[in-house]
Image 1: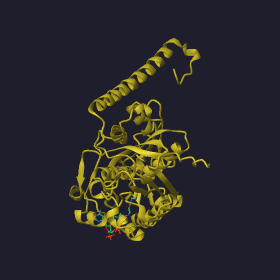
Image 2: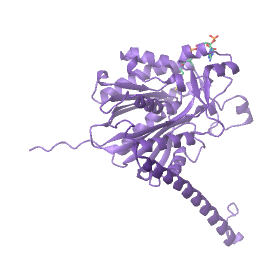
Image 3: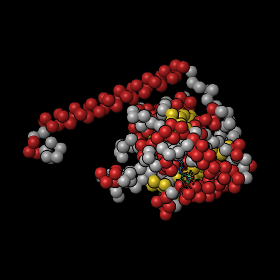
Image 4: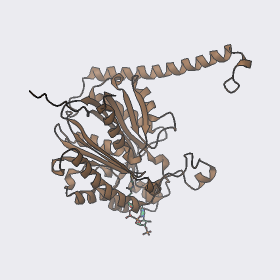
Length: 389
Ligand code: COA
């Protein structure tokens, strides 16, 4: 008797969450500060408003809130997480990574953590990486977040770019499974020769920030909109077709396509090229604008909340962005919708864990400071390196 083939180990999404800043900026608000109009922005992009981070909000804060929501849906303990990947190009700091800030805030004490830079494709890249980490058997529970606060890197006097973007975060929790549901296939692509069509020139080591670069706004986003448009309308359908083919499916099998939300017209063109009706695409750009790495997971959360995704659904996530980069992920959905939320005492218990994580972080920081102080006091100056003493 022939034995059954070994079942493939894959990653299944078991929790999801999102967070956007509270402040909403409408097209009319922008029209008061720029030579633009609600009509121009809506007709060219589909955007009506966007959420913009306030002075005290940051990528890490949005990421932490989205991650906590995902843990609640999954009813998971942060200590189960063994890897945190954050797709972002607007981290709070060059280092530490946003992923490390999330790891500490959640109390994910058994997790490795790193940021991944693929601009608006960041979430898809992070999800594909997490899938490989799980499929290889190296990791069991991985938290993936897409977050950006591009509002911090926009030239608010450049009407051709600043009207397009918003801030936000989305997160998913993945668990290893050998069942039929989960990530079926992934596709990643890049064309670095197009790096200059969407770029923040200054602020890296090639062009450190100086008074001059600030004066010339080189620390803000620069874009050749028409080139990006051409690129996006080419790769969006191509990556979708590729990932569907790789999963052994056809476009007819796909219930929902969640594209990166950069421009409604890009999605409409992709819909025509793929001959897939627009109703099968999730489009929420009117509310959030382009939230970069946050856009696909935010749209995923909204599609789940609207009942567009249910156990058994086949979905495709497809993104593109600076780099140039693109990628797609095909998923057989398995998780029940969020009504199966955990009982109240579990929320309370999880909150206690977060409080404990904050206390633990504070305690570790204090004990490190005390240790340094004690070393300074007890080490003889002449044997201690000057730059540490
Ligand atoms: N309000 C009013 N007018 C504006 C404007 C604004 N916010 N932004 C640009 N314009 C003007 C331009 O100055 C230009 O005026 P001119 O003809 O007098 O020179 C005119 O509108 C047309 O500009 P153009 O750049 O040709 O518009 P477009 O139809 O190509 O649309 C984008 C511009 C940015 C909406 C479009 O190119 C696009 O969506 N590109 C892709 C961007 C993207 O997806 N980026 C993120 C990738 S992750």
